[in-house]
Image (cartoon, rainbow over all chains, first blue to last red):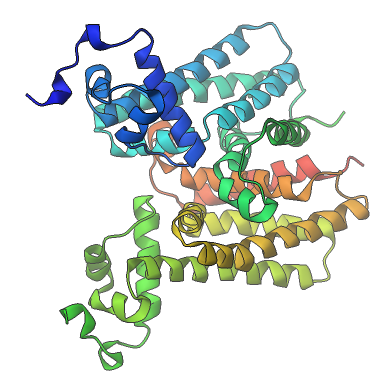
Length: 212
Length: 212
């Protein structure tokens, strides 16, 4: 047996699983990449990289667990939003801000999602689609159709709106190298996030609100 | 010397360079990926893969030449648009349609751009930024500011608008796997492109036009 299999529950400090996931997230965010090296993960987390095998089986399992962590948060947040007794405009404004905040925190997320759907076997790809893509698709249906029915939103296709909105909100954070070369800044500061959030909310709401 | 160095000009059929570039483009588009294998390139183009070395030095050189081909087309088209005596609204409508058409034809383009900026040495990264990113940034400045000055557009930040617009137009075509799992279609048909083009033009123009 290799040393990688020697780790047992007693070797795993409390919170080690969550720390591995968060460190992997930090590495991908900082490097603007969708991959990690186990040695960097070990160095930055201060944890034995054998714990990756213990908790996740291998690096691919860690990536999958990170996708599950990040996407489950989104689906829960959208469910919670739809259960609120808010009007369609307030809901959508809140949602757009949340999408921007999500891509600020996890700029790798869409690329990770595409990569895991592509590289997974059909069963796992279906699980990802059923767990995350379909619920979000249904949520957009409700989010937008409620507004159209009440005459607050123009008659836009909710599914196409999903692509334009998430693409618009994501682009800023997944094009870090454009920022570096055109804006002479490489870091995604909270100030930049706030400016982009305001721009996205203003712009997307203007695009969908019925003229009154 | 390996056999890869044996190719000379006389071995290269007319149009071979362009055919290699177009075949690489087709492979990345069809596979929704940002890489090629030289054996597939040779098989699909019917050309000896040693020609890659002859024309481009290596695969990285081929990728760089493909980026140059695709991005130069865009910069020329935007320059031509700005030199036309059209009003700001007509210009922007035309441009949004062109962005959608570009990502339909070359859905890998933004990912290729980011990859080459990331993987190139600083001089080459600067060349890419100076040749393509800066001219587009300046073009957006003019495209949007003309409209704001004439009272046709709301007062939006041209640079942030660049991110929202290209992100919105690109998303549909760079998320093919979402289409596959949620829409039960994997192919980017012209009918889907036309629907998405219409949606993007309608939605983005509504977002930027001053209410009259």
